[in-house]
Amino acid sequence: MSPEPGSVEHDPEEIWRVSLRVMGQALAAAGLGRGELRAIGITNQRETTLLWNRRSGEPIANAIVWQDRRTEPLCRQLRAAGLGDAVRRSTGLVIDPYFSGTKIRWLLDHVPGAHLAAAQGELAFGTIDSWL
Image (tube, rainbow, N blue to C red; front, side):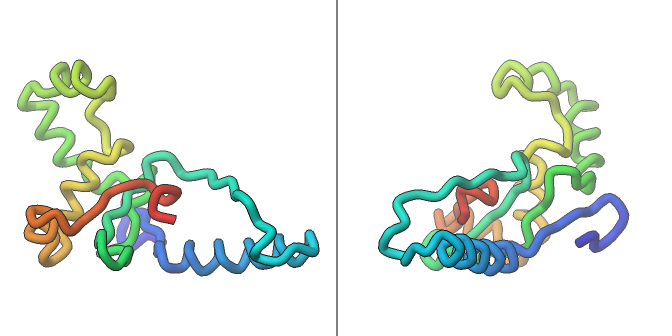
């Protein structure tokens, strides 16, 4: 879903529901019961970023998808402040909205209560595969 130009989000709960349905269909097609399943393979969308409550596992907002560009203004500020080389030396990455750092910052700044929850150690961060 695209809530506004340059923004791309996914509903993580929908991804969970669809994943469960597909797993059930695959088991049925293979003639297997749940107890016979030993492992699954998961692929991800690389830098699609999600924050969730550590206790409940519930996402605090939609996932921000890898191609989302909403954090370009922050990236521009970081580059203008001369942080590009330091970030590259530390992470091996360039400052770009593709990567998760500025997406996490955006979520913390725009989801009510997120800063406090993070400060109290209540939030986890990851890509869709780590959340699933």
